[in-house]
Every structure is written in structure tokens, then in C-alpha cells.
Image 1 (cartoon, rainbow, N blue to C red):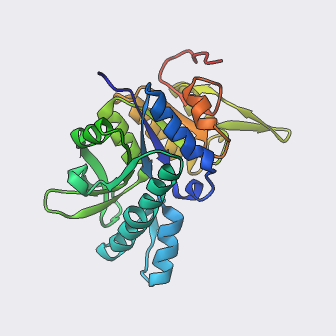
Image 2 (image 1 turned 90 degrees about the vertical axis):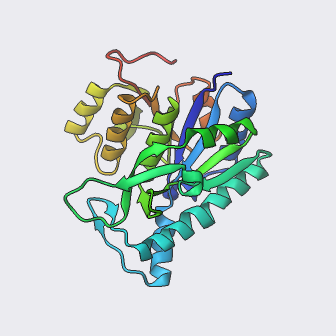
Image 3 (image 1 turned 90 degrees about the horizontal axis):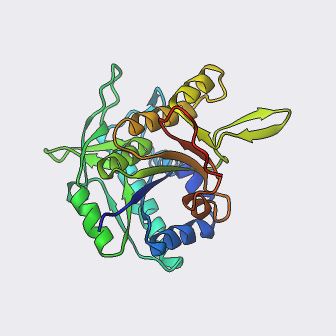
Length: 270
């Protein structure tokens, strides 16, 4: 039977605030059977904290962490060790079964260095995803929980931006891609009131960037969303993970968060 996948990307800063109902939603979505959830997570705050504690020096270029092998040891410890297993435990507490792995395991995420004019060290991009490994976990009724460390043929590890890793996994499976955030979606603030855009297309997003309604860290997020839509991803969305049962309601088609699609006219999901 053909599976419908939804890749749920969870950033490190949001992760610390997520209520137990978030994990209950994941388990419920899987039980309902229409969508199979896959989690890809980041862990920026914990990585920064551990780097500080271990005294490993680090710097950023255009928002991406310059990554040496020494930094990678700490990144792997934070992501694949601590956070990954915490998510697996949280799903278990919600009466679900998850399987935590990183892109290094079973050559899940094949990587190469990102193409950039600035030297970023071992910062990578995904060149291939071992979808057979994900599918075999799903067949066993497990929720895959993926930390975004990739590897090349020589065994060199790469730190991969979690948004980009989630996008690559979604592309390889023709999945929906859902970014979990601590905001209610993309919104415009007028007179202290938030007006949420529940549906946006590529043209509208570019206009919002020009108007600086979308700015800062949201720009790379929406750009990677548009890029994913051009490469086999059905729909990209930004959903507030702090909203009780928000993810479940979103998957049921309710007007929660922001859905981004390529179509010219914004679809009506109300």
C-alpha cells in the first residue's frame, strides 16, 4: 500500500518548549493511518551550550556554524546522543514507538560539502537519502526520528542544517513537510494584532520578503520551502508546536499555521 509521509521538522529552540500533547499528536497521527510521521530535529541551543562547556571554539558565517571535526564531535553528542533519544523517550511516554537514528546510520543521509564561497568546514548538504531504510522502519510501525548528521563515501561526517535535511527527506519520499515553530505561522502585525496568512504561494512569499513582513531567520526557511515544492514536496507548512493538539488539527485540514504551495491561487482550507 502506498504510504503518505509527513516530515515534521523540529528545531532545538522549540523542542525545549513542546508540551506532551505534541508527542501525543504524533502518535495519534500514526495510529489514524492516513499519514506516516517522520521527525527530523535540530539542536542549536544544546550544541552551543555543550561547545561552551567543553571549551571548543566556534564561529558563524551567514548563520551557518563553521564546523571542524572537533565541533562535529560535540554536534553529534548533542544531536544524535542527547536530543534524539529524548524525542524517542517522549514518544514512548505518549504510548508510541519511535526509532532514533542519525544520517550516519545505514548511510541514511549521503552528504557533500555545501557549495559556498566562505569556508564552513564540514557543513554539508544532502545528495541522497536511503529511503529503503526509512520505509523498513515504518513497516515495523516505528516513527523514525532523524538527527541531521550526514556522511560521504569516505566516512567523513557533515553537520547538515536541520531545515535542509528535513527538506531532502521530504523530497525523497514525495512527502508533506511541516516546520514546527513557536509562532502561529507567518503573520503580519497591525495595531498590535497578528493576522496569520493561512495560505501562501511563491509570489505572495516574495512580496512579503520585499515588504519585510518575512525577515531574519524566516527567510531561509521559506526559501527552502519554495525550493522543496519545486522538487517533489506536496506542501510545506509552518505550525505552532506549542498550540495544544495544533499538529493534529492541522493534519485534519483545519486553518492552523501557514500552508505554502506553488499554485497561483491560494487554496481554501477552511
